Length: 215
Image 1 (spheres, one colour):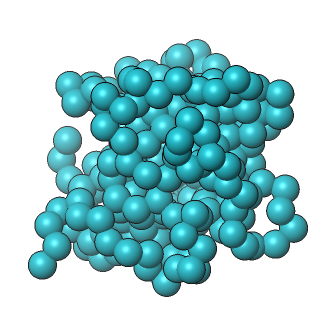
Image 2: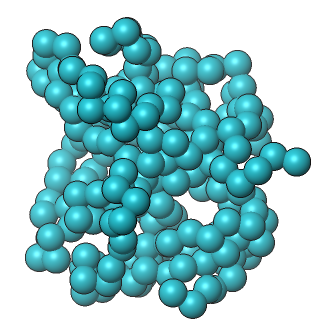
């Protein structure tokens, strides 16, 4: 039996297995680069170590834009932004690594709490395995955001002080596999510059596979 967090192959319930560049598999650390001129965001689909991340120098025209530990067991991008239909994402080799074009920011807003809310053009779906415990961001209006990434610092922790007044963090345990498809454009919340959530997802759609857990 595979251990907790073990990397598995693409699950056809989530997306097309043959489009290998469209997938992120496992909960390891990944990072993204933004192309300065176009604002296109490219993700390194392969996991990296802390040393590899620190040593990676973006090529000319690109900057580091995100690094974090993936929260989903696997994720699938149905297409690159701007594509007219689902299909293999656009890829590029940068600094000896393969990157996929998966997102483009449309706008952002810094809230009074310090949280940053982004509007992102992306076509993204996730699978979280049964038996896991997750922190879900509840917007308080029947919609939630599922966890996208966490801090690369193992000592960092989510706190209520990071939240907007109308939000709550819910710790839940999955009784079954949870599939979530993020609408486009996506609402992406960044807390303390280290934790990411994306939605909005209809809260009723996930209630059937979760149990509340005391924090």
